Image (cartoon, rainbow, N blue to C red; front, side):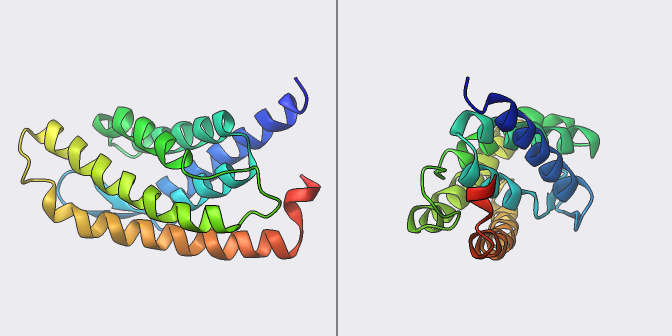
Length: 166
């Protein structure tokens, strides 16, 4: 039970940051199926680099799922919860730094999970495995933007030694 309250509070904070950065800040609708580009994944990556895995997975799933629900994309809530939790699982909080080698490399499988997960979800929802193809490059652009923001924030956290102070 050590640090449970702190982890719950931080998970709630990261869920809220994920929600805001997904639903409102730089929320750019793309395509015809309710997709959008956002920076919310950067908060999922940051949470997963700081918090124990179950808390990080919950923060990402809750924040991103709520943003879909509140942004008019209710059909995406279940896929988003699954995809964002799996993306968080690629990172580790067991390092002294936020942006260690493992977390830097985790950006690649996280982007692939996002790409494949949303392609499959869109194909299943729309009943056609071709309909998800045009969204793939946009998913990669969104992943690249969130990855860049994560790297910048992680470097700042590491420079300020914030992980040790949390």
